[in-house]
Structures are given as C-alpha cells and as structure tokens.
Amino acid sequence: MKTLSVVILILAAFNVNAQDYLTRNGNISIYSHTDLEDVKGNNNEVVSLLNSATGSFDFKVAIKSFHFAKAAMEDHFNDENYMETDKYPKAGFSGKITNMADINFSKDGVYTVTVSGNLSVKDVTKPVTAKGTITVKNGKVSIQSTFTVKRKDYHVMGQSFVQSKLSDDIQITVNCDYDKR
Image (tube, rainbow, N blue to C red):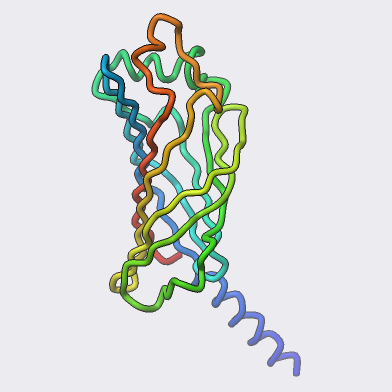
C-alpha cells in the first residue's frame, strides 16, 4: 500500500510539472505616439510562466532590459523622472485566463483568450484585463496580446518639458514562445 501511495505522488507531481510552460526570452514592447514623437522600447528578456491546467500567468520584467532606438530615450526612461529603475528594477503581471474552457493545450489551434490580473509597475499595482491569442502548434505554446495602460496611473510622469512628447496611453505588446517545463 505504501508503494502505491509513492507511485501516486510521483505521478501527481509529474502531471503538475507537465502543465507548466516557461519562457526566459519573451518579448514585451511599449509604444507611445504623439504628433511630436514616437517612442518604442523593446525587451527580449521577459520571464513568464503559464500553467495550462489552472490558466495562471506570471510575468517578470527587468526594466533596464528595455532598449530604445535613441540612447537618450533609454537614459531618460530609466532615470528618476520616469521608471526610477534604481528604486523599482522590475515590473510584473500575475493573472489568469478567464475562459480556460475554450482552450485545448493538447490540440493545435489558435485560441482567443481573456486574461485578468494585476499589473505592477513602480510602486503601483492595478487590475488589468486584456484580450489575446494562444497558439498551440506541435506541442509548443505561444501567446500574443496588445493592450493599453495610462502611464500616469503607474506614476510614470517624465520631466515637464517632454510631457507633450509622451502619450498618456502606453501601448503594451506581449509576445512569448513557451517551452514545456
């Protein structure tokens, strides 16, 4: 009987791990458009975990890993007037797919999803709901989503002389290709 219990525990542990998908090189880009300037930052060092059994998602992003076309933009982005990366080095999201019944992780396809959770940037955590897609192909899982947040909601202000160059609405695009963990 003791051997049967051990076998059940091992199988249960394997089953839980088989439902996790991980990426350490996901992509998040941010975009601001005004008549004066377009600002786009790109980060290819996003760590994310997806649990296909529960639908839970977690993302962690090192703010200093965002890169911009102009070195000055990158410097401003990281300084004390914007992201304050010395004080707040990471951002994150933790949430769940709200329509898990619509997704079959064992069948190739493109599935429309809604994800709800909490986005943490600097010293602020706020609820966010976003639409996206999950693509399952040959056992691989990828996700894509684009949504908008208000930068001032997350205390991203900037210096007064450049306020007109930054949109109040920041577009965030997430693209991640996961491997089974």
